[in-house]
Amino acid sequence: MTEALLSRLAQQFPLRALDVGEMGSLKANGMTFTVEAYEAEGLGHVSVMRATGFFGLMKMDTLIVNPTALDLPLYSYDRIYAMGNDTLIVELYDSQLSPFAAEGLAAVKAAYTDLPERDPGAHWYDEIKLAESLSKKGKRADTARLNELATAHWDAYLNAPAAVADAACKRAKAAVYVEGLLQNGGPSTDVFKRSLGDEKTAQLFRKVLFGTDK
Image (cartoon, rainbow, N blue to C red):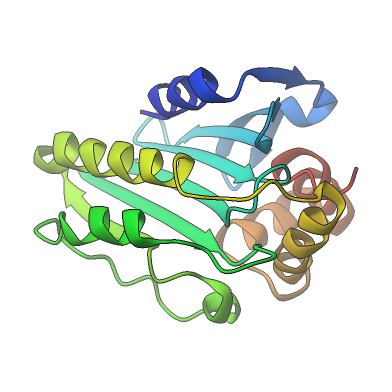
């Protein structure tokens, strides 16, 4: 599914692969991660992280967009397949410099209320997470419909009205979230910190995953 989303993005915003060096292959918490990063022309920084572990019983894909050329919110997609469950998490964070027109995303979310909701829990970043975010947890039988939701939501995000933005200002706004993760933690942040240490995790997040350190 991640490849399909990336392909749709590339049709609108041509991608240029970035050198991620040793960060391209990582191990943490019994999982093996492969990481890629791109510059999306006219959009901003894009990263993809794929993980497998526990003898292939768990797979996770992450797709992150830090839009520095357009005034869109920061976008984070996670898809987790484990123990017969299919979990879709899309989180949108307030990194805009001006109000965001979210009607298209809200309409997509409202059209898929039949899919089982997942309780995301309470986190320090909830106050900057937009209401149009998604958190669903279904079974393999729900995969096709979860794919539909992910695609429709993605298209609504990429096509939402957005002004051209100042890249430095957008990176600074997104850095509030990224630095908050490094300081306060988060589900994946904590895993990397335990395995890679604080310094290498900070490098991974700032330079590769979110592109806030440029």
